[in-house]
Amino acid sequence: MTIALEQIRQMPVVQRIQLVEDIWDSMVAEDVDFPLSSAQLAELDERRAAMAADSSIGIPWAEAKARLLAGQ
Picture 1: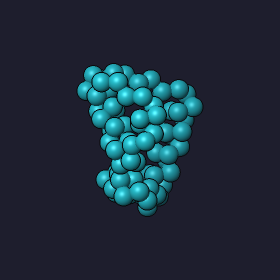
Picture 2: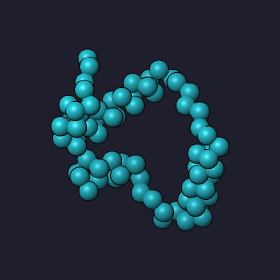
Picture 3: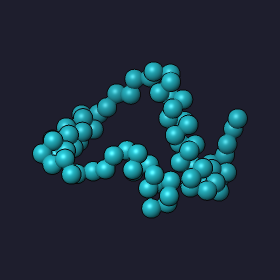
Picture 4: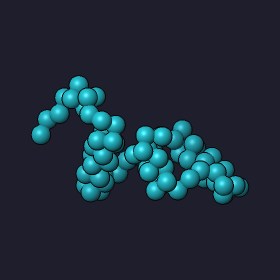
């Protein structure tokens, strides 16, 4: 199946999010290693430290996903 970028842009946001999830799931299913840059690793370390220091930072993935799908 080939989908042109213009076709994707015309899809409702909820469908585009689902498409991204489907694409991501297909890559994860292939057990591909995604190397991170040193800048990305440093950012993750900073975020982990911030979360460890204050557990009220952020929201659970299920809540974030629900907000995205609701268009918030």
